[in-house]
Image: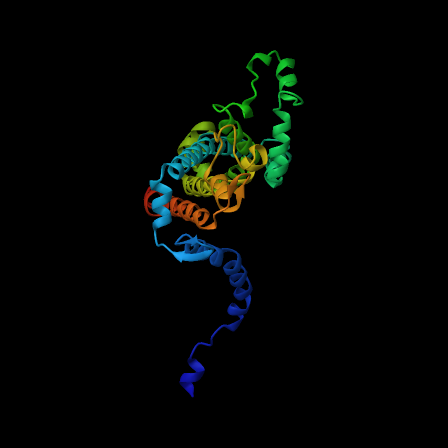
Length: 308
């Protein structure tokens, strides 16, 4: 009897609170993921589903008609990611550093103004910027003309060389508020004692940021980098809203998300193929998984050693 009294009780309230979230997450995330992986191992022959193993992956990477589209979409996706890493995240860090200055007035207003585009719909952002940049009814030509720079204007969304970079910068404009807020929170979490000790040693201003603050927020920068990677390789909405499912001009803005959408659901004269679409989605999942694992087991472990 004494052993029964001393035995720890099972905490049913934990199960009660976690169960709804686990069920919802499993229904909308886990089940679709495994079902997509399962579909990639089948194909349809005479309206019957037939198991083919990895044959769909051989088709995707082995047949020119599929592999050319896949590598083009992957290269575009990588460039989309690079623009965000080189433009969005450094700007976000710089804005966070400026807005965290204790003597800056109206800092809350500036933070809100920069973060507001983040909550806007992709459809609204895509169509709005398509209108702004239009050579016919857009305001971009007039604005550049007003400052004497009309010669720099070009129909950026209509040129293969500029379309993807232009949409990447539009995405940067929309989401720069996320790294800004995360880095801002990380900067505020730095103990005042450390900054005061650095000030006593004569380390202030930019020197304090580079020598004291930046090393302390490296873990946050790493998290932002991996979130940027995952989000960019899952991107779809902005490209679809601005350029359509064909991701024109001439597939120059085609990324893995739009390629998968056209393949899975079909578009215009292209018939939908859920099995090849699931194969592309599985390849996207593998790319993201590899990138996350490289970060977790490589970069993050090194940052922890550097931090401590």
